[in-house]
Image (cartoon, rainbow, N blue to C red):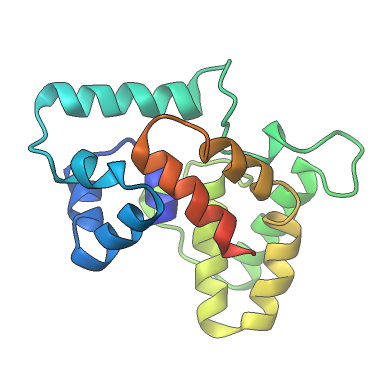
Length: 168
C-alpha cells in the first residue's frame, strides 16, 4: 500500500484500499486528519487536488520529497544511487521477480519499486530481505520519510510516518 501511494496519485482504487477499516484506523492513529480526508465524498476537484499534491511532492523539479535514492544520496558516498540501482536490478534478476506493470518503468532507485522488491524477497527469505533493505532503504529512506512526515497532505504525512516505522 505504501508503495502504491508513493507511485501514483490518489485515485478511486487507492481510496478503496485506505478506506478498509484496519487501514483507515492505522492512518487515523498516525494523523487524525486522515479520517475526514479519506472518508469524504470525493469530487472531480478533490481528485484533481490530489493529483496536484502528488506532482508537487514527487514530480516537480523543485520538490523536496523526491521518491528516488538519487535525490538523497551523495556522490562518492558509501552508498550511492548507482549502488542502490545495481542492487535492485540484481535482486530482480536473481530472484526472477515479476515487476508489476505499474512499476515496470520506474527507475531502479524509486521507493515504490524498492518497497515492492523488498516485500517479495521478505516473503521467501527475511535474511536476504534484510540484506537488500540495508543497502536500498537504510541509506536514504529515513530522510525521505522524515520529509514526507512534514507535508500538509494527511495521507502523505501518514505515509511518511509509516515509512519511518518500517526500519525502526
